[in-house]
Image 1: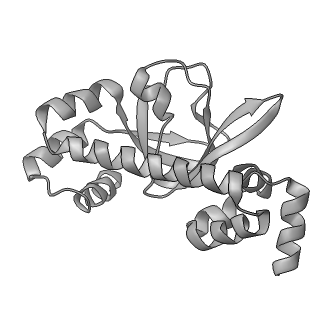
Image 2: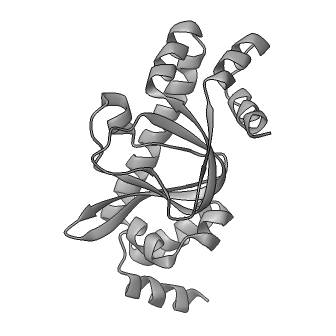
Length: 191
């Protein structure tokens, strides 16, 4: 069943043949993580891209003893420390499960092999890169120029319901670049 979910997700982007799909899916490993478990710890080389079958994760780094959330992902989302994955260098980020999570992961080596064997697979790589760039570009713009209340309302409007309802407010505040106390005031003012 998890591989079927991934298959349908991939087919929504690219029309692979059954033979290509069989090869692609054979390269994805099933993983289960407990709540608060780590897909990646800082200073480790990120060797996998994860497709979240079900669950909820966050990407964060630590600065001056404070955790800064940079990304939130849930069902049918991809997550990785892309700079570490692409360059095969130690990550500055952690990827942690907020709740029990099941993923299908593909290794760096298998990604490269799929690029070589299936020309259409490069389109998946390009789509992942484009979505990641858009996500980070949008986040940077909002962090620098959008008022706190507007950022939160946009987060509520554009984020999957699972992320909105199940992510601790401390992580949401960090993700939005808002002090937790300010987020509490904003939430009170709009309820």
